[in-house]
Length: 197
Image (cartoon, rainbow, N blue to C red; front, top):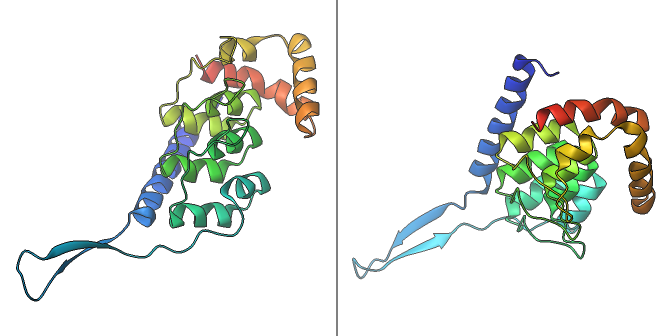
């Protein structure tokens, strides 16, 4: 179980990151008054840097934190869904990309967007047992009662005995082509189930 000092530090770091992202991405607005008419006032947006050549989704998948940050600074939309319905935050949550998840949440990524399997970012983070991202999403206000497309709450899945859950994890990891760290997942699931209560 995480100590309250560790939780406060994680929450403080996430809050600091959110403030930093908000400050970086706020488009500076200049008020320009024309020389002729006093009523000639218009807003001019300061130029933002161009987005990186790599897509935001590819940057998250590849763990390219610099490109993720640069996309946020460039104002790349953060809630765009891919063909499977996943947003960059959903992908970061599933893959354990903590930095990407922090900056995406700070940039206003939607916490409740469901993919084609009915999974939200919190569902993904919990299922794949990424403790830091689970805490980040809960602290940001994600619904801990989130369910899959069949209405099964993630908490119920996390409370399932490992002997029943392991074949599900094997099938999912085989389907998406990532190695299964069974020992890490088995040992982490009870902690996540507790966090979701």
